[in-house]
Image 1 (cartoon, rainbow, N blue to C red):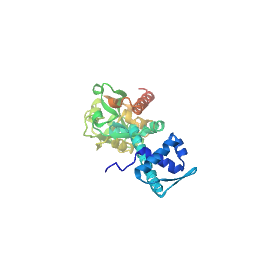
Image 2 (image 1 turned 60 degrees about the vertical axis):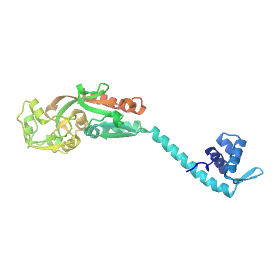
Image 3 (image 1 turned 90 degrees about the horizontal axis):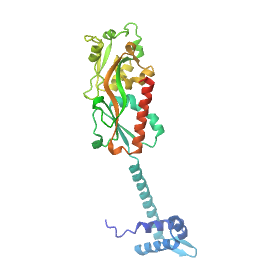
Image 4 (image 1 turned 60 degrees about the horizontal axis):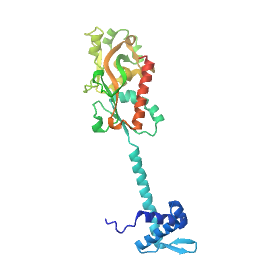
Length: 310
């Protein structure tokens, strides 16, 4: 479409203000122009269109029929332009902060604590990208990631949040059963064991077979088994009293503190070479929202380590 028939936006703005206020002087004050400049803009617009837009009388102006038609269109057009410009500025300045982490970490640690950050920073738009694959931050434009890996594989520029440890945990109701006590590890032969069977290789809480060997009971078998490919589902089953789970320390610590789970066998801990590491994408390192979120994560981890005596 040719733009030759369209008058300039400056002429339209001058006309719209004069038509709305019915005063060249007031329009000039609003637009920070002189009265003569607005008058010239209107005159240039009338010459461009070949019509008279105002009836000029002594100390007042009135819109002609043509002026009223143009005023309606100009008002709608300028409003649409204003709304679109505002929306585009908002889209440019408010970019979502994407956080990549495992499904278990998102469900059991991050989401339950996220309200604290949101209350402190309601202006920051968070997007949780929960999956159990390793994400390329640069290629997928992800600002922050939490890696669960052996310490030797932690990225050089990452920040350690937690060292890992594993407990045998279950619901208090299951631990209190007198017909099937859970006083010593050998008692596990009478209980359903909850197994993590995810296909990923970089997120593993370990296996019951490994833990039995560590306890000197390599031939021990549970009284049944349930297998899950998502760790948060496994913990939900433990909370529901459906069996005994291997609880990854940082992910079940709140449940233990709230009494929703109990650690068995005098809180026997299985050390792990793994930990949780916070990683920030280089392209986002200078963003204030990323800095605020990263600082909050580090502080939350520090507080929880202190509460646990770690």
